[in-house]
Length: 483
Image (cartoon, rainbow, N blue to C red; front, side, top):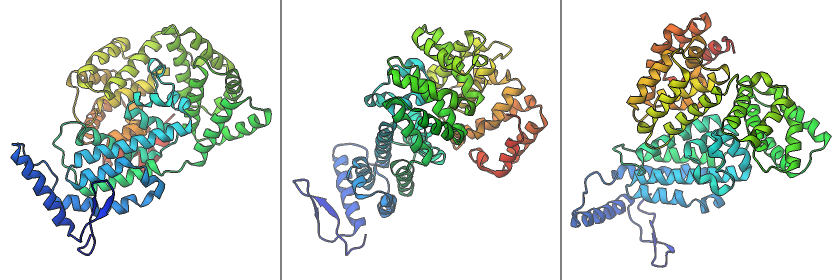
């Protein structure tokens, strides 16, 4: 802003008016001096309360560029972005980051509500007992931000790249905003960049063709009985689905089908679609379906168990059923461990759940094949920490469980960087340190030649581990591994 421009001000009625031309820096300095003098009069601290003026000017100077992606209607409803800019202009960057995240979460919830809320809950909340509390749009507030973001990525409401970037902003909101006491310094350019990211990757990101077609399918499945022509067309659509979307659709339809109280025509439609979708479902997701049946039985959810068994029998999926009920107990322990890791007081609660999981795994590290991938991913997730600190009492248990990995589980652990959520964790310095520690523990367990070559390539990689999944050479090594 130049001296020839005027700064906006609010009249007593709240209407925005224009003052006489004034230099922006002088205006911010005058306001700062006034506020700090008042704090001093009250005997309150004045040092390190407000961000330096040059950072505030940098934020204000780049805000217009960051907002370029919003149309007039979107700007008019972006109250928390307005609060973010206001907080930033007066030097409260930690509060500004909080407001930015509030706007992002609000927009993300709007996207979920506009898509299909029951399908979203079936995908986003893996815990059956927790999902029973999630029915309407109002229940979205019960879902933590990490699951909201992850679920949106799984159903395609945000891109893989967008998830990676926005999850970093979520992390910074947790540990560098006014949400918690902290000593982290933020800059104006960082805030403006994060604002642009949230606008680009959440608020204005258009649905891709596959996501739009799945939404149309979900609407039709729950609206009325599907005719044979539509079912034939849908079978063709399934054939072209990306693997991850086929898995997500399977999990979603399974969740809708096994929810008590479904309309008869909806259940009929899913039964018609299920065998057509099943050939394109990964082994992991097929085992997930079998494990869900065992969970229903273990929790005495007989009506849901009957519905789950109908879908399994419909595709002759008996080979994907767990051998014993222990699988369900172990699955519950794995899910509980991830839940307490993502929740508050995780350092206090993780050791208790980790000990329970260690008891189920046993001294020989026996994990049913149907649970191996989920078990390894969860164990790696909690071992890498939340990036802010270690749960030291639990870390000893995690190291012990990792030391019990067999070569197949160690191979899964080595490839964990290819998972979008773990890759996002690996942006953080502490998690990168823990990743190096993990490689040292599993080194002796990596026996196959392709796996040994991948391990060496990972160690020789010049960049940070969160970039591994994007490297063409690493991708070639991954492709050479047995599935």
